[in-house]
Image (tube, rainbow, N blue to C red; front, side, top):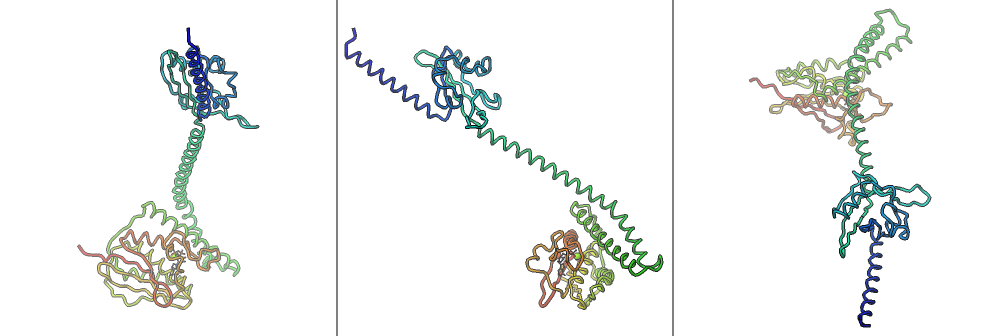
Length: 400
Ligand SMILES: Nc1ncnc2c1ncn2[C@@H]1O[C@H](COP(=O)(O)OP(=O)(O)O)[C@@H](O)[C@H]1O
Ligand SMILES: [Mg+2]
């Protein structure tokens, strides 16, 4: 017979166990994960609040029901065999999203809108207690991670597409350059030749208004040719395809030749080139044609940015193993904010359509590339008074 005190003690213990179970249930309801427990008869014996929300199945519907009654769609699916294995063989499993996609039919319930499926990672664990087997299923919501992954995948695809476009553009650029070279330059040269002949009058006297139109056409064709040649030069330099024929070059001869070549251009701006007393016999190490190209650009720039009737001076200064050629003009100079960009491609202090003087803005960037390839330096100084001094330093030729 049990004494009264024994039965009181038992009642107190039972009450404490009930209280604890209640408290334990509340703690589980706070979990940010889905939790449920299945017993060895495959019946659900615990179902936390997260599961209620995500499955829309209340505890009263689920408790004591068989797992496959709660989730009829999962009969025969992998999750069922995983739960069986936990109960029968005590094996734990992790069902990751990448292999199993959405495992349980669980949704975020959104008011009014379409319900969105919860992406899940599921752990299944065998538990033994008081000689009984249970299976604990824990569901983690990995939707934000999956969405981030999706965004990253889209970004990666976009970057790949952009790269393809850039490569295509670069291929197009080189093809375009060679097309320009062959298909545009040759006919343009012939057009300019024909227009020049007509303008000169050798094909017969022209009415003044026709003569004016022909000469406009002639000038514009010339400008186009300059532009095309500059673009071709810069692309050849950039792709390293430009060939330099380096050797001893008589500096005085090259200077005289450049001045002569620019005489007519200077006259358009009423500018005269003056070569200050150069000693003959200076031999530099250079490519004659490329050196002429640089000098032509410096001389033409000096003329077109000079006031009318003013001289452009050319000076030669020897310094150690180098020689400096200076081209000094008395123009308006280089605006302070433009100085750092002057050697960049297509850069002009006055890039407007209403610019008074022509040009492509490529001359100085080509000149810089050429001078540097020849082992020299190009730069400019602001002299006392007005104007600018552009200079190039090139190597003296030394006999072996
Ligand atoms: N001697 C100079 N005086 C003033 N500005 C100059 C002079 N030389 C060059 N510049 C400026 O630098 C720009 C770029 O020159 P350049 O590269 O030779 O191109 P372009 O002669 O075709 O304009 C010119 O448009 C002009 O703004
Ligand atoms: Mg120029």
